[in-house]
View 1: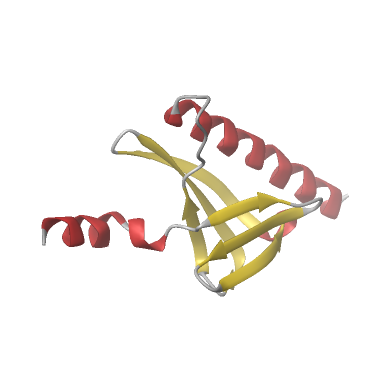
View 2 (view 1 turned 45 degrees about the vertical axis):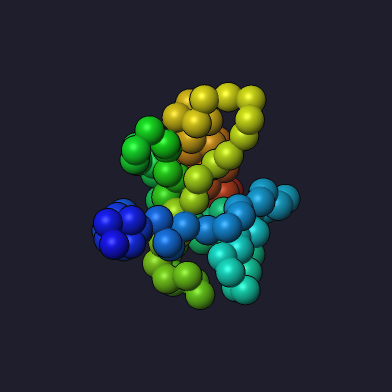
Length: 105
């Protein structure tokens, strides 16, 4: 029962199954749903620490099939989970900023 309560409160059950970079955006999959989101459609990129892991958070200008935001865990065997999450967050933030600058200019 405790584990179900933790999953509900932490929102872990809402995490994306995969987030893959494409040339001008991200392919995001959770369960059977998959969407392509252009970098310019991402309003905010953030991250938060949770139980020793870094969770990346993407907020959208216009809601997708996943709603107005989606969260995911960047995974690798080579680096510490926290540092990897920060690196992914910083990279995605640069990509979104560049796309928004190109659109505005």
